[in-house]
Amino acid sequence: MKRVVLIGNYPPDKQESMERFAQMLYAGFRSVGVDAEIWRPAVVLGKWAKSTDSGLGKWIGYIDKWILFPLLLRWRLTARHNAYAEVRFHICDHSNAPYLGHLPLDQTGITCHDVLAIRGALGYEDAYCPASSFGKILQQWILHHLSRAKILATVSKFTLTQLQELAPGHPTPDQDWRVIYNAFNNDFRPMPDDEARTLLHEKGINLGESFILHVGSGMARKNRRMLLDMVAVLGNRWTGSICYAGHTVDSELLALAQSLGLQDRLVSVTGPDHETLVALYSTCTAFIFPSFSEGFGWPLIEAQACGAPVITSTIEPMPEVSGGAALYASPTEPLAFAKALLSLQDETIRSGFVRWGFENAAKFEPERIMNQYLAIHDLEPIPVS
Image (tube, rainbow, N blue to C red; front, top):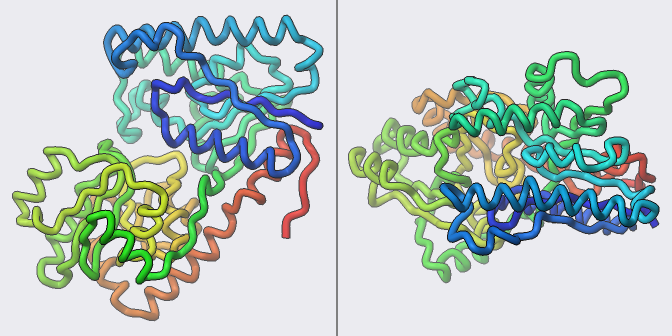
């Protein structure tokens, strides 16, 4: 049986999206008969730190990640060389690219989800990822190793193009760099309206009949304030609620809502579980994704798969990932987003975008994506219906 070892993230870093991706690959490989396992840096010194997000705890976490784990990798591969001679390795997160220096390059692939932090460290303001002095060194180190990858997948054409710009002359003829889109990391299907609204009511989430939805963090590049700005522009032409699912709404956004007189229409759903998220996607008037920068944008296809019409940025990779099955507006123009929302009041327009969204979402089913990961590792593909 073929074996794949996936390299996951350091648990205290709480990289939720990267953990979902690792679990998606793990389940995908096993579903097609490949023996898969996940190796992660062990929490050795980090267990004594209150937090590895900043300060001394962060440096302690670095010892676990960048000194102890590489030593463990080398020991495993040296002590049991024959056992791993035919094994394929895959690093799930590009921020762990330095592990390429401790794994057999010809047998190891890596997924690059974005180059936002790298570009931010190099001074690109449009990445919306400013870096500290040490962060700049760290991202240069990551880019150096990433550019050496012999087997590399990026999650969008846009990300591949940006990576090639950052690593001139790559990929070389002996490097296999290709685009493999992200697959769904859970089951996203429309939830019947009655079932969805009952679930939301039981969770204490009261949104009314009409609401717009944003899913994600409060990072500046996510452009959460757009939802407030567009509703302010609409005035009494649209009187629904504004729902933020993901990170808790911060004080700055609350203050903006207060200044616009929208505080009573704002609903924050912190850390929704999967069923709650599906219920929100399935019942929202529109899913709003006005990001300034992304590597892929999972919520776009999740919303489409649940039957939500999508309004998103004109900035790539949003048009690429949404497949043209969305309404597009500049992330700096609330009026354009507002007009797009009003256009969905026409049932013909709305049903058309919902239908096109379902068609686009079908391209990201795990079975189709896994075949591409099998191919990049020279493993036998499976028939896809």
